[in-house]
Image (cartoon, rainbow, N blue to C red):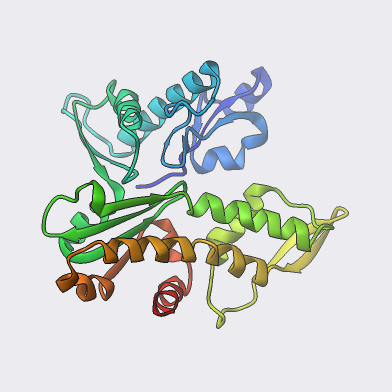
Length: 283
């Protein structure tokens, strides 16, 4: 089961009557967002406001409350029997500061009996039984996390976290579209939907055509170049981090690592990404 990490509350009595629910989650939030106060409590792999980044206390508290509700929704989606203990493994960014895992635990403690935190790329490797001689790249929304697997639990020096991930692609894509197609009317949600459907870095791809309004009139726009450029923006930082993990490893095993790279996470679905990373590694 999966859902976008979104929760929305009806804005007023009219939206409450229309929706018939006190809270909506995931795709329902996107569909009804004009009637909702929307929260996306996770940013850069952590709960907003948990890393002392200048977020006002009221906003930080609201994001923590939203995170708690998302955890509860996840438990409901798992259909856990009412009286059974609930054990969870929660993925966190590989280099999350220590107070951020504490915030994650706080968000789950009401409905979880026991919880283990692990780095997201390690969870990918463990789930696929790739426990040695591999470099794992987990490309999520807020972060891209890299982990060097060598037959033991990874240590701090085996992991790298980057903020070049899905959200960064969305931002770059929106900026490019505004620059190259200033006449087109679109929202960030529209750009994200286009990315999730047509994300590519491949030259051998079909044209990416969207029908968006221009002065209120539906118009077909070719955004192939912008899509490829935005998606490719995460490749150089990933390869640079890969190089650091390879170069700092035992020289006898560097070649094995370099030739066994595993892509995971939603970003791994970008068409042609494996080939683009391989080509850039070659350079």
